[in-house]
Amino acid sequence: MTNDDGFEARFRIDGELRDEGALPHVWAACVGAGRANEALRADWQQQFSDMVESCRFRYIRFHGIFHDDMFVYRESYGHGFGENRPLASPVYTFSYVDKVFDFILDRGVRPFVELGFMPRELATKQETVFWWGAHGSPPKDMARWVDLVTASVEHWIDRYGLAEVRQWRFEVWNEPNLVPHFWTGTKTEYFELYEQTAVAIKKIDSELKVGGPATSVFVPDDRYRGEVEDRAAMHATAAASDVDALDWRPVWVEDFIAWCAERELPIDFVSTHLYPTDFAYGADGRAVHIARYADATFDDLNRLRRLVTKSPYPNAEIHITEWSTSPSARDFVHDSLFAATYIARAYLKCAALADSLSYWTFTDVFEEGGAGLGPFHGGFGLVNEAGIAKPTYHAFTMLERLGDRLLLQTPHGVVTRDSRTSALSALFFNYPEEMALRSVGSANSYEATRALAETGPTRRIHHSIGGLEPGTTFLVEILDGEHGNVAEAWHRLGSPLNPSRAESEYLNAVAGSLLRYTVTVPDDGVLDLDVDLSPWAVMSLRQAA
Image 1 (cartoon, rainbow, N blue to C red):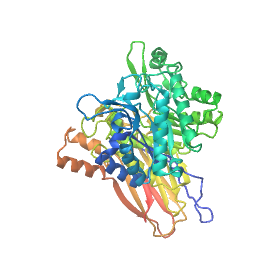
Image 2: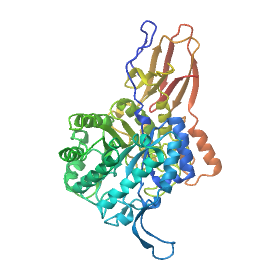
Image 3: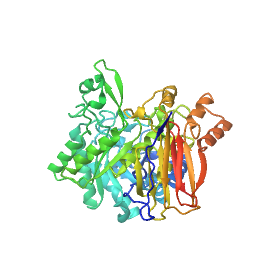
Image 4: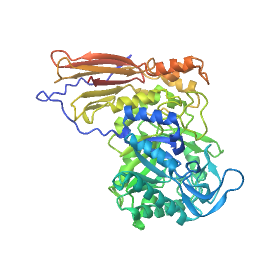
């Protein structure tokens, strides 16, 4: 069975292709990574360099700038044997952070600076989160926190210049609504942290950009309405027969804007996180997994834009500083073809709705839960720990090959033009209609993920593109179940946790083995594109150089 794309389009107006407007490359605006210290690793740096070359990311955001393993904040000092001796006043050392920022900037990328977590010696509580022990505590001394932020920003201005640092974004904390994991204080205490931080940054230079509240996913209940999380408020959500009929809302954003407006505080950007999956605790105390419909991100972004536009900060940028198919670093869908198709569809649909929609994350060099078990363990990355490209990586490279001007948009892809070179490019996908009310995450086993392969028929993509130069060559790449589907190849090997060198070389070869061929424009100047895409396939068409 084949579904037709429903279009035979000739974009010809007096011999010219029709321009339907801009196509912002929101997928390249920013990308995420685990924590700052991981950026000191040689493999992280090599993967990032390769990623910038192919995906052209412009900003990168990660946790842990002030974590103890970066050694920025020091109240004591010692030789490693016995007790450290206290220092008369805090000392700031930036050598580790300098290495990370130097490396990033040298590759033409800027840091999207997440200010956190709390240095242990400045924390009020010693509870930690993650394998690497992040402190989610408010500061024991707000003045010392302000001094730390001030010293850091002033150091970066001295090192990189004011004009450069004015291009950065400073985000205050990460997911403070997730109490007591990422924040052990209350909502009001976070707002107070934001107030002190924003005022300190603007005191240095009024054109520096600061924002928040960096909260987690939209929710349809009042679990975060109070000062701390209320699990009882989740019970109705966990029991709902149709979660998509519920009223999903951003967390803390309206209260954050109201707090800042009342105190005339700056908000240069509103940041939050969007994932199309969630968890809610039922009355029996069990966590219930929730998967929302395929267009949840699109609808959430539209709601957020309306909220910001009608607020006292209508010109504030909107940055989604984490987004993916699910918020789990052990979700096997991240390794799959299905995630690639979902990503391509969502980014094209949401391209004009945010200033950034930062994919979490570019690499499986990611240690929040410690290293993963095996090469394909459901990690967030576009590439695995060894740098082997997942299908999601290919989705990003295909997206980035698109031009910046939109010629045609259908429910199943786009045709674009590059305004600088006039080169034509396109991307099409087969996201099965049966999945219209379902996102692809979260699967807790690879076998459960593979079941999606049985969903949906082949889709016919048929477009005639006129007004082209005869003899022009176009390159076609197709990612599908048999081409570039590396996690499936690993599964067929028996899912070895520790692949041999030969197995790793084989998997790397499979990862890059997309279906590739060329097509040439005939003498009449009309490229007739007629392709059957299998379920979940993603196809790229680009003009050869």
